Length: 426
Image (cartoon, rainbow, N blue to C red; front, side):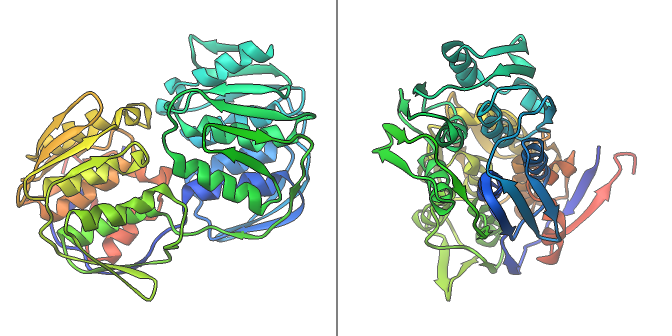
């Protein structure tokens, strides 16, 4: 287990934001379902994306990896396989591919690592019961063995567990031999992720009727059409550098689509609401050191921002409340508990609630030894927090960033950070 020792210092400079992991998953899947040859460019081979690429190869696509792109060739049909799908720790991979593997009569097994083994898949288990799909689990946990073929029809899905279940069905149902409808049975959270899915589907030739996010009408026997797709920059990753600039020095963030449908684009509005110095110049988002003010932040539509918003709140005047964040307890870690525990070690005044956080800001934290909880977003948030610490920060299990952002530490150093691998015996 690697650790990283960080000496406190402000970051400054220009950075091109890495591509959106959420959009990369979706583009790879759509391209692998299309009849013909597609190219997906501006990719980073994080562990999550690699898991999805391997999964789509299992389902019949031929994939050639280049430095930052993939060429994908497919006949537009899901392959009947008897294979094991190793989803590593990627919730998107497993939840997108489970229904896709059932587009034909299949006998497959899904495995994973870390927290993914126990992350809830009950939405699909209920669907299996309704659709007469045979399945076995380890008391609800992975490995998951499935046998059968999904039939078209009505799919009742909760909207407050994870939008990933809905996305998995949106990819799959157009391929079935008959029309289907997804009915959302609770308030739909993370609408932005559904918008991303619908947009990618449209670009690859699939039509979905969105009935005000209360239901989705899907014609069967549709065909995905090959398409070249460039993945845009990731606002959830940009949030770390934007916050680093606000609590540190001037940072220019490039390769962000300011017309993006990404829900995490709201980070720009949140920073402005907290009176952060943020402006947009020629498509570049520029942030400068600011005295920010506490506020109330509803994260129901942007749960991935919780760890870095907690860090921003630590250095904002007054009280910040993060609300409607219960779902982040079932991410790579229990993120409410994880970020509270680790920021307290650094000296933060932070309280964990059932569905959120209450944070009282200060000028600085003290530093210390913290742990990433094997969660990429916790590790990156703690790295940013080091900027305003009085002493060094040592992050245990710092390689967890590889899940989504394998070049994070290189970019951190490029912007002036001092981070070195550290042995606890030194």
